[in-house]
Length: 262
Image (tube, rainbow, N blue to C red; front, side, top):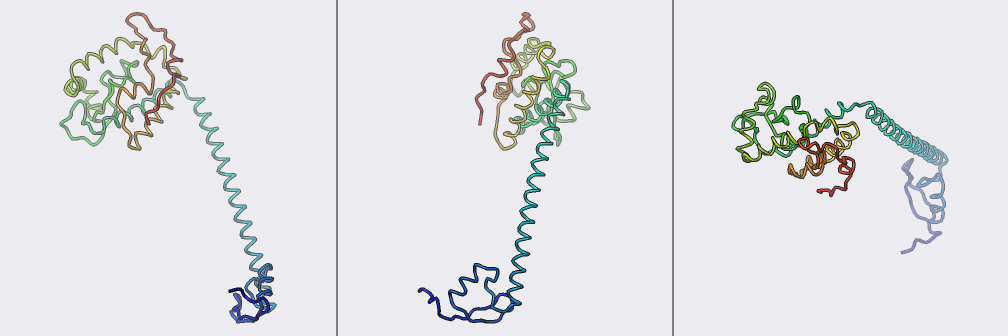
């Protein structure tokens, strides 16, 4: 039912709490001013106007703070990007190599997360590394070869100096003897691969790919060693130290389109 415009109705003032009379037209007109929902007492009108003014000031202050916060976040993001670019520019090939190794080992631990230690599967351990069968110190070129790195207890990988004999026995038991022979073949095939292709630029590309893969794995995705090998594209299949084929088109191989797994 429509309210009659000139009919007096009783209303309650929001400021003083007193009841007052007014028509629908009067109330509609007052709604357009600072005196919304107030009686016609001058003190209430002043209070209403003051409250409105303070509300507007607070609103403007909030908006200004939001703008300042947004600008500060944008500035910080730009500074972080700039700092990251500066740090990356200052990083040497050795730095990239070490960073990639950390990501690579973490991926291997994710792949083998339901497997026991490769060298001592019957021993209880609470800390695990990405252990190399052929140590990084003596076989630098095989440090990122997916079949040379497995989940290994920190005790076996550290104090026991890699536990090589037990490591090999564990690989043969888990896979087969051919797996061990293939690993030895890769050791001979990719000899000095690091000298030719573990450059700062290549390592940076591999690091970025490893970081993305590790993020997916931590979210619950799974990956096999062969899939990891194909996704990173570190070792060129045409390289063979034994035949003297050490010059390969590594740039084309690295930049070749990769089909995402997820």
